[in-house]
Length: 248
Length: 257
Image 1 (cartoon, each protein chain N blue to C red):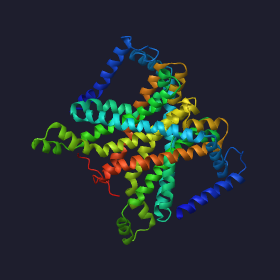
Image 2 (cartoon, chains in turn purple, red):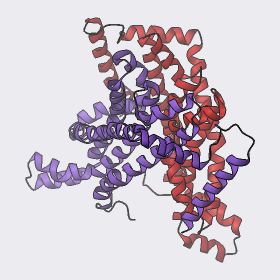
Image 3 (tube, each protein chain N blue to C red):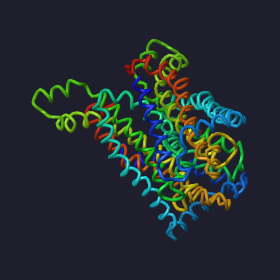
Image 4 (tube, rainbow over the protein chains, first blue to last red):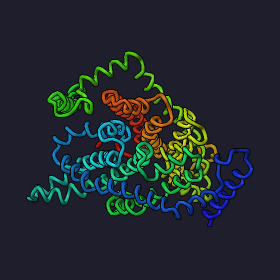
């Protein structure tokens, strides 16, 4: 209830401000204009297409992170010597955001879908690999030794100790990677300009269609919350919460 | 292991990478237009450093991050404590701030340009929105998770509201605030690079994006390496020590592992 009241007050204040402040119309369009922009763009089919485009790209990157990044991180983390070698490299590459590589990728692959996908997948991949590696390394040796003493083969140690022990860290890596990746996607769509929500709000700015910008921002925020709710939270709950590392 | 030996071991992977890069480019497997050899990148880096443009761009980028931090962090901490104190307001504000966190970064750019035009005001606005909401959120959450017992203890011994805030809530929330700050600078730094590509004519983001227009892969690589090194230095010299000092001091993690 309190939440609805705050929302109502915000919308009322916004409407009032946009009606009374002596600003040009494009500066602060009222909430109704945002609503009108939404119905207009849905009717034209632009909004559903752009939402689908951005969602497809980020989900592809999420799948790539899970199916490629996690196994790579696990494999690199198993051997201590290999892990020590790759740690500084991965740390460097995860700290250079994908968007910094974008200019080089534009030279390599041109303005197009390929550049966007590679930039976003890069951004997601490195935090995921890095954290999977960290996770495997942080599993106490004691557990590994315990299983080994009991005569367990190597694959059992990987399956029963290293993988479950690394899961919380993997969940952290996915969250960080996707958070950076989502923002890199929006930025890449602005710079490369091949459809998607980033392109939508950037292009709207050229035409002073501020209502369209605000609409796009709202949807970008909501899509992230949906990604958080349907993908990241379940992932965390099946790992971190189940392992008793956080109590909620 | 001595510091020198550890440094050498940390540098070894990069040496391997550079050797592989040199072999790839000198062996003629990749065109120099796409991936110039390491020597060329080093030379361009040296030239940019000597004519001063590299330093100007570094100073511009770091200055923008610093401006963003100075403008947003004090306000975010103050508001976070104020809202966190109010047990009825806090649960209402939390999801709203959470929404703005979901939006942090580059998504603010078109609105920033609409309101402030191209230039430093737009970039500062984006940095403010990115840093402010993350720190605000973490302060709010931090204040709310401080156990009531400590507050009661201070009250019982005759402490006033001021004592509760300065002696209990801020120190108790500090680890959460520092985590928020670290995240905020991580997101802010990335948003800055993207924003500089579009909205400014200085900074490392501008340097590399402008170089892409002229297909200067060597300049782009100088920029990318600088961006990576600057982040690692910030993390190692500022953020990690800050985190250690606050989190380990409050005994939330043991430093011995």
